[in-house]
Image (cartoon, rainbow, N blue to C red; front, side, top):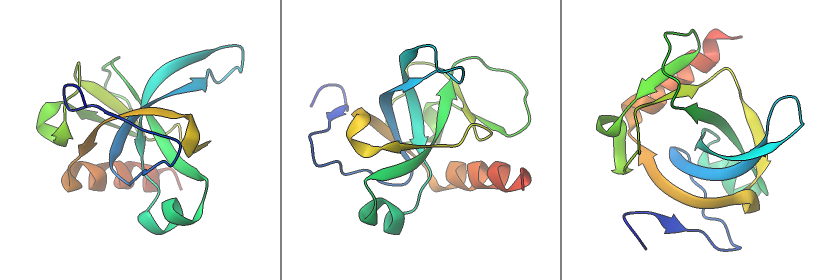
Length: 122
């Protein structure tokens, strides 16, 4: 373990509120990049499935709908390199084995805000 970062092995222990790094494609499917994401799927789903549901984080801070601005005050554990915006409008499913590292966990209040933004889309 280095600087509060856990390197995950083949058996993924992925939990709701985890902030992780993984390679995932751009929305146009023409490339991939290692990016941070937040696990939003609940523990029951995460235990039963090889996949989990996530939303991406970006360091592009804008006042946009369906997003939540966070910094290290929003972290229950771990640290963010920069203040970030959780993009609740970009929900995706991904195989847990694509997660490379877990960098921390957001607090419950922040998760509630993310859930609220997700529900606003429906």
